[in-house]
Every structure is written in structure tokens, then in C-alpha cells.
Image (tube, rainbow, N blue to C red; front, side, top):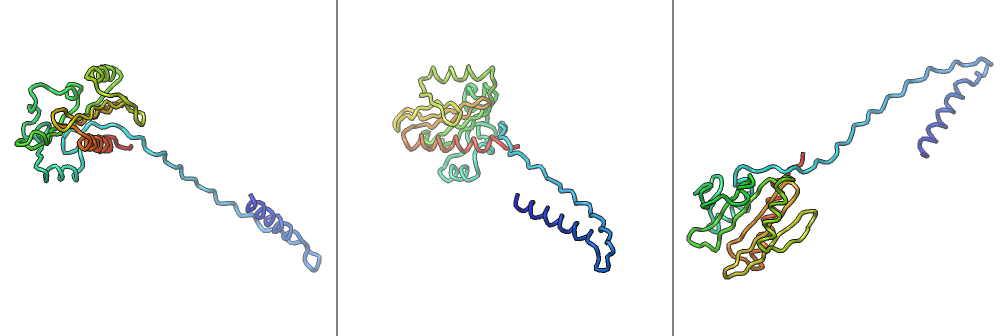
Length: 203
């Protein structure tokens, strides 16, 4: 506000000086005013809203770094699109596949305990409640994190798998570790976060 006030006062002073009489008594004509240059305001784009996009390949479900780490551990892509056994790895489609999604299985065939299953499926208002009900029926622990529902089981390092399912209004992301325990469940949590960052794209 102070700058505008000073500018206005200076302009008024210039106009008054232009109308002052010369030393010989003649009145000077005011100089023609210059049209102000219009200021063009560029609209600021609103930040993009993340939109769920279902990947079609297992290669797009995890980062290149994670896939390289799996390979170095002897885990190869066994099931799912582009997998060794394709979508025939399981005898029947997984629940995520039945929901229209994909399921990808990495592991060392000689060491079943290394197996990790990562799935992504789209959800709608019509399908979401059925998925939630089925997860509750399996006895998973329900909680809410960042506006999403999670269903989890830590499992153990002997025989019980660890699993984590994250349900949003439009997606179902799950990771199942062949064996559970704190470390494997932590890995499942990190994998879910990684998948989420890849399947939600800002537009």
C-alpha cells in the first residue's frame, strides 16, 4: 500500500508541475498521458490429483531397484503377467484377479519361504463392501491409516504368512509374505507403500 501511495503522489506532482506557468507568464500545455501497460496475470495451475491406474505388467508394479534386489536374492517372477507360469501359477484366480486386477508372485522355487505375492485391483462402490467383508471374515486386524482401511496379519517365522491389504475407494493393494514375523511384515508394509506410489499418478 505504501508503494502505491508514493506512486500516486508522484504522479499528481508531475501533473501539477506540467500546468505551472513559465517564467515569462506563459502556461505550458500538459504532456500527453501514456497509457499504462496492462498487467497479464498467468493463472496458477492447481496441483494434480493422484488418479489410480491399474498396471498391466508385473514390471510396473514395483520399482526397478526392488526388482533388482529380488533378482539378487534369487527371487524370479513366477506368476502373473510376464511371469514364468503366467496367470496359471495358481490353480484358481486370486481374489484380486477376480476383482479385475493382477497378482504377481516372486520367489525362489527351491525355497518356498522366499515367496512374496503382490496384487493390485480396482474397486468400485459395488465391489468394495464385498472385498472388505471377505477380509474381515479371515480374521485380519482392521485399522484406518491416511483415509484408507488396512487389514493385516503379522504371522510368524515358522508357518503363518504375513499379509497386508490396503483398501481405498478405488483400489485394493495387497502383499502376502510366505512367512511372517516383524521383519517380513515390515517388508510387506514397504512394498505396499511402493506399489501405491506407482499406481497413483498425478494428472
